[in-house]
Image 1 (cartoon, rainbow, N blue to C red):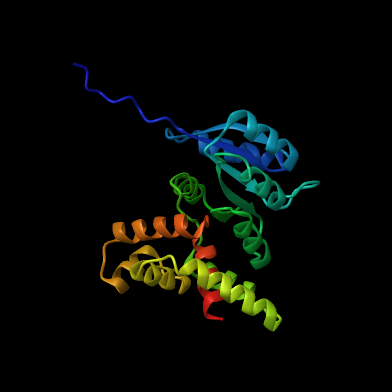
Image 2: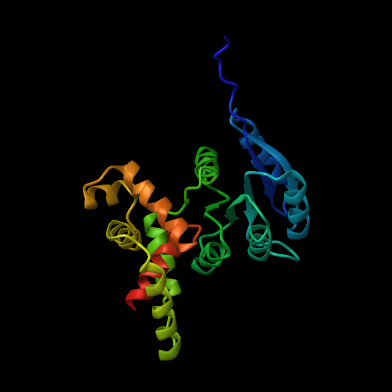
Length: 228
């Protein structure tokens, strides 16, 4: 009996950017990897929605700033579809407002366009696996940008809503959420809680499901809202 396994299907990627040279460069980098393939490109948000509906990719590399429909509104539209792809945002500069907007729109992370090709590849693979691509330092900055002054009524409403969501967690999941809010990596969380990295990933997966969030920053914001 033939017990050989069929090779895994490559991760299917759509590249969305209004600059043709950027799209060409990203395609060359991604198609150079045996486990990744670019199935389509788009130069604006409306075209991106069409090609995603047609090709059903696993990952979309989405430019934040584009003429017409920008990457944030396009991401929200794409992620509202059934069984949506994962989205990794592209930007030319590290702006807290843009990053926060992308994460709140449902993106799993962001990379700068001048990121070395090997790190872009790593980011695509991580997002394809459902992992967030955001450094602890960036996490802390984004949370700080998100916690500006609010009215007492708005703070009370946010606190009550966040506490309601967090009440569904186990004690260990709450500890993991707290560590994520502190900007710790999986390895750091494992050391803090004296558990394995695999267990941290399992707890984080449970947090995504129970809290109906798509990335670690959204977990961190809930924790901060609950404590505000």
